[in-house]
Length: 221
Image (tube, rainbow, N blue to C red; front, top):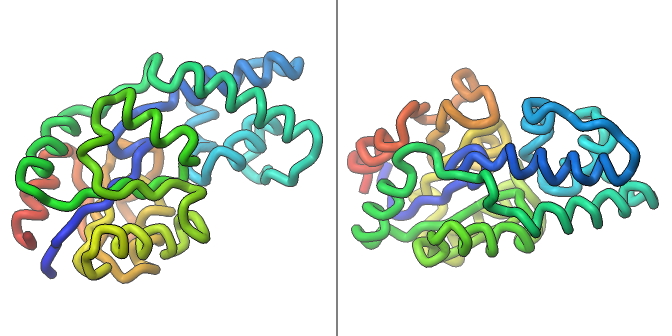
């Protein structure tokens, strides 16, 4: 396996954004006359994009999906407003992420973001965190024809980076990331500290410290 580029999931992989997502979701719920949810509950609803997150936090059910009803549309407007106004109030990088991203950028390794987060949040978040320039391609949840676990966003990332998909390493924290990598035919590394349980999902490697990523890719770059 020769790794020529790397694609990263965002929430739960590079940054811990649960507190800001929970704040926005609970502000939405408050305006709709609903009690606040525990941040851990909101965390369990993260991973399938903003529409799913809004539907799940509105109904407080993992089975809820966005249907376009009037109350869901109102909830989405409220969530959008509250989240966009405070993307990085509490959001922070996981330990050693900035260090590793800087190292990879300095090495000239092509880097991409592949996230189910909508572009309207992804791009300003990366800019506010000061890492936008590290990435040669940003594939958000509404950029490709489908979201993870579809292969589409990874295939688009490989195309935009100009690398063969089998040489693009996907790094994520969830079942969606691993399935998307498998569906695209690329190697996958999972981080153990994110929002999903990944130990038994068949990633090529599971890392517990972000610096371990350098050791993994040095064997294939």
